[in-house]
Amino acid sequence: MRYWLVIPAAGTGQRFGDALPKQYVSLNDRSVIEWALAPFVSDTRCAGIAVALAVEDRWWSRIAGRLPAVTVVTGGGERSESVRNALAALSRRAKAEDWVLVHDAARPCLSAEDRDRLISQASKNKVGGVLASPAVDTLKRADASGTVEETVDRSGLWRAQTPQMFRYGRLCEALDRAFASKRFPTDEAQAMEWLGDRPVLVEGSPNNIKITRAEDLVLASALLTARSSS
Image 1: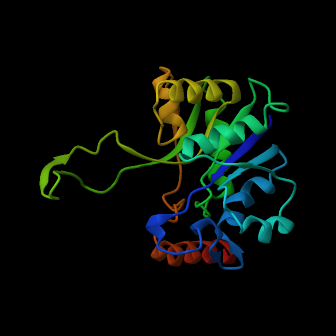
Image 2: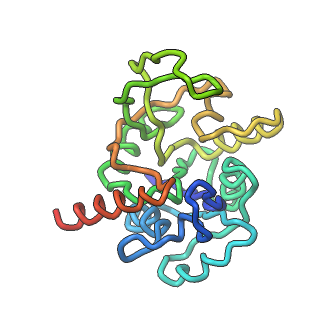
């Protein structure tokens, strides 16, 4: 099988608290986004990559020479719009039944094992699937003031990760219908759910973290260092 990869990377990372978008921050010997791309660049099943960048992006050119041929497009104001723009850039090459994986630019710790597990299990489901990890912490619901309202039963709850894997044509349809209804999904699975589709959850490592705050870089660095020395 083969698949296409889409990376939405138009975010400014306001929670990260740095003038440099988090996907370009240095992590060990590469930028965060280079680590995010690495499991796919090394995979011969990946037929092509489309990355959606912010209009004002001035950092991609600094790393582009270290990467293989990547289709670059302008992203949108919402993550889902960036994903759709990247999908559109693949329209002349990707077929409706082809698989497409969408991965966060700020997830640098995806392992090849998790990548392969998602591809293996999601490809057996007609809809596709989502890499995720079961919720293990006690969950609280709070009111507007931050006071606990209740403890939420965590059984059956999962933390969605990326990559998320769906058929190219169906994902395009899901996003187009969402936009037509003026809805912007927070991930691709939600757009599919709005069509009535039910993706499979594929358990992945909790180490597949997303860089959200500066302290996450310390953990990501430790995880990558441990992996390279094992």
